[in-house]
Length: 191
Length: 104
Image 1: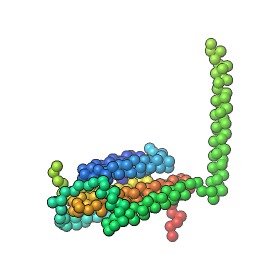
Image 2: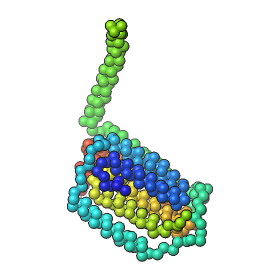
Image 3: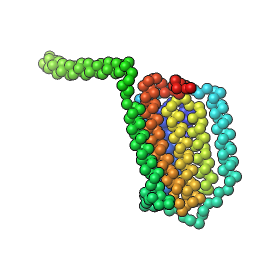
Image 4: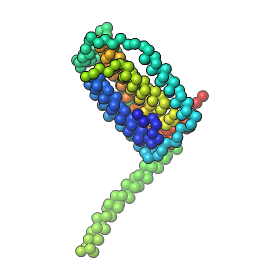
């Protein structure tokens, strides 16, 4: 899992893709095909593509990121190692009691019915809350990423850009109009 | 199929969590910090699913939490990338050190 150590940002995204696929394989191995499919669709198909898009939008893909400061990376390694050892010893000393006698068989209909039931163990309310959250996130994304109208300088620059684009388009159309004429004149000369 | 004990899966998820923490500590680039957050959320997902499978096979609560976490992670990534693009538009950089206007 080199996704956090490589210095080229595009390679970091590709490593993230592979680690997410590995996690999906782990879910498949635990016989949770539905979760694995959701993982592949949402993460691999959605989030990684979004991240790669934003990488291409914001910077050159081949640029190397600056190395982290040595002091900061040293303390980060120290903190991470201490935390990992502490957590793993806690896990190791706590003896879980696995329920061996019951087989774990998951059916899709159970998921669906429990997701939408309003009874004691139903998940209808969190389902609705998550759907409202997704709607709010979509609207928020559009509002945030939409070009703002307030700063006059940016607007001017944009209109300049648009004007440039229009003139470029006009130039290209003129070229296109001019091109057949040139071919027309060039054709007999060649012949 | 030989049954792998729960503690190995917990080892994987703990390692993934702390790899994500390391990335969050060392990276100063917003997109890579976002990737680290995705790794951390995934390790939590692995934990939920493993506990549900090994300890309480008659219930489904861990599965539901995993599904909700995936949905919230998708929403969070979308909002974060919108913020990143807007920040890049105004600052021409996505380094967190360059965006310090709203500190204090």
